[in-house]
Amino acid sequence: MSAKTAIPFVIRNFNSIEMEHFVRPPLYESLGGSLTKGTAASKLGASIDTLPPGKRGCPFHLHHAQEEMFIVLNGRGTLRIGDEERAIEEGDVICIPPGKAWPHQIINTSDQPLLYLSISTMESPEICEYPDADKFLARVRINGKDDFRRVDFRGEGVDYWEGEK
Image: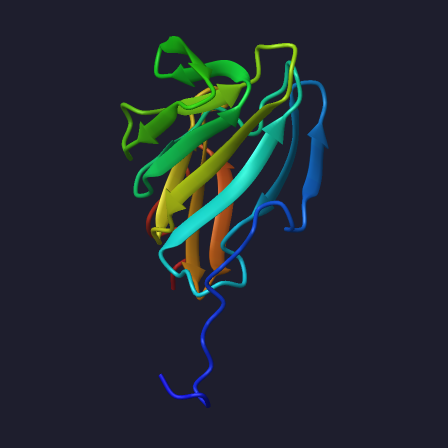
């Protein structure tokens, strides 16, 4: 690579990224930041997340296209997966494939913060289902930006021909 060729940003230190505090009482709260935003990564997404005691970062959900991996860096909690709950702790690596058999959610059931890495393939298009609320997210991303995004409740919807001329 010549001196004139720009090298894409490939290194990110999770101790110096911009962190965002998210709160939606009473169950959801997290402090997290993207590790891949603004880098050369185009097929991987990664973030670092901290859940306070008793909180969850996102609703119980499953992906139809994306695979996810979670690496517990510090603390303990519970992985809700399918109809089960499993204890998780520092050092655990959690691999979640896509599909209806793998709805999941991380919950901090301890009295200390739970710190973990979230890594995912950035498949698009993606359908994500939320079994507890019986809703879905349909999403298409192009160059890291939403081109199409719809969250709605499952059900009959509209007729295929409705609104057509």
